[in-house]
Length: 80
Image (tube, rainbow, N blue to C red):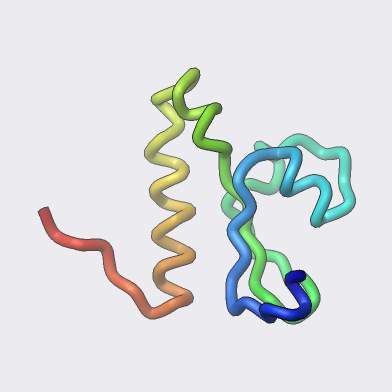
């Protein structure tokens, strides 16, 4: 499916999705927020939303990851 879509960016949410796509058993905290090449697309992993419900202190890290994605896509965060 990813080959058919050919996305510019893939943002995997959580360790299960990230580990499956990267074919690794490393914990997500080892590679979260880092860019990888995945079949011609830029790939980044961040924490799953359910993780954030249990660990709200990690929201800042996820926001930084999402800002990286937005920058690659040429988007800017909205002002409050």
